[in-house]
Length: 517
Image (cartoon, rainbow, N blue to C red; front, side, top):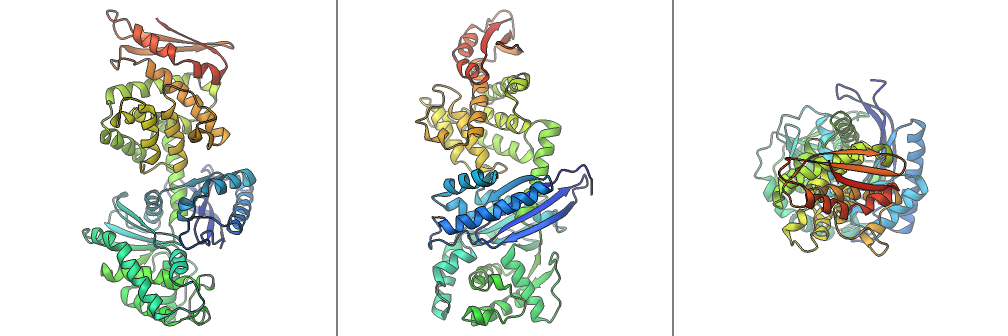
């Protein structure tokens, strides 16, 4: 292990269980895992629709994260907690996130199903030699199932379906004993729910199929036990055939009670109550797509979190700008919403220079700089809807876009920065701002104040200013505008920037003087 490699504590806040790994990644992109922990939290144990996190489930979740946090701190590891479908869909997710943050100090990132799938794929390509192959990755969780197709390390297709082992168990198998009629009903539901996804998956010429996460790993272990083979501690690279899986699934379905299923060799006792639903999900996809062989990956979401965290940190540290995926996401949205690229690129450059020159005052890091870079490009996407109130439209578009490479927490911050790049400052009556933590509110105010001035410096969108000079002392900040040519005085730009300087004066407690050099 490279001793200088930072330690990452990845927490997978799942619907069924919470997982922790503490690991480092060396310069050769090899991971060394120092610690693993797992808690069966059953966060998604509420009503059938999984729209509300129950109090007892939240308490179990908070306790698990508290314990994981203490372990991570003992290793001096950076914590990154990612929540999936149970939290993603919950009406009271903000309550849970705030309680976790207040009681444990851990901030939970709620990722979209698409981002979840991307992180799973990143984990898998680091555990198996599949990076060059057109690969389908299947991840059956407690609340959702992700199907991802990737090749060359890039994700080509992701779908997240509300088909999970806990979700379907609560919907179709709520009692101790299951019936053939319930199994039939569940199968019909899976077929209907997944029909568009299966149709799309059939269009790809696959070279490899990978299964990851607890349900599939347990089914693979059961196929080994059925052949009287020893079940290894790590199943990574294990191959299981469609025939073997269907045989085990049939045996599971024929065991109509938990007690009967516990007698099946290789079954995980903690999954005996939900394995029927999980098995039916896998049964459908392997039979519909005629998948003859699945290779097991012991890496998945949490390992993907580690690699993704390291890769983003390296991109920020070494290049001080967006990594490839995030950059592609931003420029793709610019194209989709017909952004004026010359204006946005100019505003980005001025915003980042202001950030860098004033860093000793605002003390934000390269992570926040990256968010400013992204928002500078997207701040005017609201024009796609209307010129009037376009800053509010920008907020709505950014907040509701699927943005691969960005977490929901980052997206919320970016949307708010765009919201305040013009017109009013944040107010107590603005719910979009008030739901943010005090730390995030400060980030929004600082970055929005820089973006406001940069926007003013290109008031006519003609780039009449070639550069700026920034100086500050204990009482004032001086921003000098350097004209592009002496024939055209940037007087409107000076006027526009001065109109927008108040927020920067407030957040940095200094008078701002903007002038033409």
